[in-house]
Length: 470
Ligand code: PMP
Image (spheres, rainbow, N blue to C red):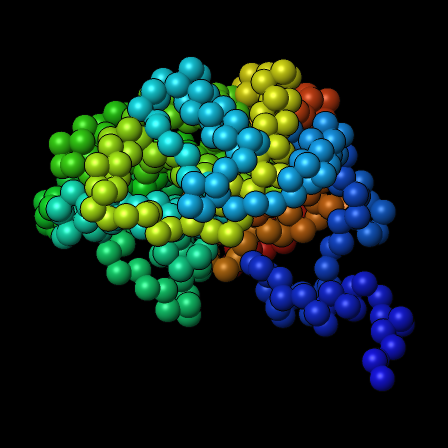
């Protein structure tokens, strides 16, 4: 006899059945889930009937906003026509061919990166970065440089949570107790001037110090052992961290000189979030590999991509007769429904010029945040680019001291937010709240979201004062 489960609420069933990612089991068992029932535009509705402006666009990913019928129609058509076939062994399908072509065209025509030559599809940012980590080693083996294998990443980086991607991720809490095999992964300093600039140091001096550290690391390890440098052009999970002045301009020639591939992880920055199509164009980057996910389908379907340059492709192609098939790929690589959804999503982005809207309303958001919260005693920095925006908390503004690890003032504020009508996420690296709504958001919605944030900050003040005094 099967157990009668009809008396259980959905919340009970969740607690008894679901193993949630990135969730405290202790808290979840006490509080239960927040069940999201519906979404439309920039708004969600949860099981308590609260209507919430989603200041996170999910996980920085629903770039066109929720509930677009065009995507549902494109998906339905694709499901009816060809719901699945793989792309191994030269098999292919039209939607994925067109999506690959579209992505390359965007790099060529909108981002000053004509060197991008082929697209390898996966289903998550993590698997794409694992693909990249394999590819840079494969590439060096094929061209007779088997010792050139290490990858330099940065403290504060987020590159995903599969084993290799998690090792590349540079935030301690993702490593604790997981025994990741990060062999060959090196981390250099986080380029977050506000937090890690030394007293009296200018931004340029900070950049030079970090670049010097990278040069010293390359010299110490030996350039002949280093395959790649991976970087989010603007660090997302780290806290919407813009590169300090001159960082990439100074970094790229060093990588080139040392024959080190540059992997730009544009999982968040890609597809309009920064106000440009890609941060590659925004910063004039010359990547050898670009990681894409999230905005490629606005998360209506899981698709990721590793876009590789002609230089890498040439080596793979030349080695093909000797090495045989490229023995890497996934069941869902190049899924036809993902291709159709991606194309429909990019069509909306182009027709509605969403990158330009992100630039425009993003400027408005930062201005308004600065005007409204710039003098807040516990908000030390308000920064961002396009709709990748963050507020960082300080314990003492005048002395520029920070809250202690584990105090999480930003999470206290985020905890009040849903009752005030917004979802806003606290980030795990520094005490930072992220503002990364759908790119379709209006100034009016942002005003409403900022009102809700103001209320949440107000409600959190007694706790913030207490924490700051501890
Ligand atoms: N790279 C970056 C820059 C990311 O922000 C993320 C996800 N937040 C990932 C990789 C991993 O993507 P996924 O969660 O799809 O595996």
